[in-house]
Length: 398
Image (cartoon, rainbow, N blue to C red; front, side):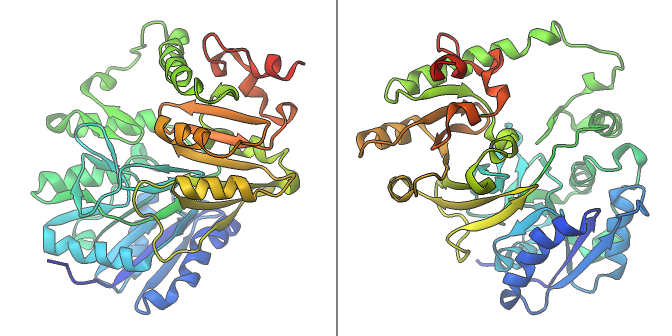
């Protein structure tokens, strides 16, 4: 049975007005017809008035009027307020004390389909699904519950893992923590991991009976509470992943003769934009099932001094995008599987130059139109060069 929609107040603590206006504000304005009862409460922390996220977000709860409060990052572009209200309606109907857009299951799978910078991430869910923990990018709870039992304001979890902690707390009290289908684009410009280890140690010490806890930033275990513990041969740990990723790329490369690189395009897209024509990059994500229903065919978002134009589609959309690519523009195709690569190679000839990339966390990707000389310098490094394949420098003949 479909749960009724619930009224939602969105609370966002922000430290960059321009980012908030480009992403969250713009998406709410574009979708305002979907939720006339939506309440939006931006909390200003530009000058550091609040020492922790919990302090700022709890203040927002005290100002909220609607039944459910959703906490959303400033760099999020929402694709459906209907989905947000539907998720809020499931809270009391299905016994959830906390729901979010993306989390990690007890088996370690990323659950909930969102766009992380320029790549789709996580498994799509057809219904609310229990998880070990939620990511802070978007999560919600009943306002009455948050007033009785607010978010932690501990300095140990000032800007990390406060949703993880709250999810464990509500589970300990007999409620569920889960993920709903809330499509969004997280247009993150950086990855801040400062004091993440402190937050994880605080959670491990507080919830010893619930460990291990799987999160989007790693697994929290009892071992991490032991200060000074160092992994064996830390400077060589990358080599095992490099070998596995090299093998995966070799198997896929048999059908495609492009230059090849091992790289997470999410982390490197801004370096790519520095040399892209007009500092503009066109992107199509391979969508398994629906994503962004009712949203625009393509979304343009600013990233530092450039912009990305992103759409989601299937292999037929990929072929059309490659065929329609204007001369001089760059096109990035992401979330590809080996089967997708084989289907693309069986179609019309693909223009060159192009680069085939792979990262275990996001799968295969293809870049069209970018000369080798304009590619990010880190792609020439040993870690980025697959075993037995010439580096990009050698491929270009320089």
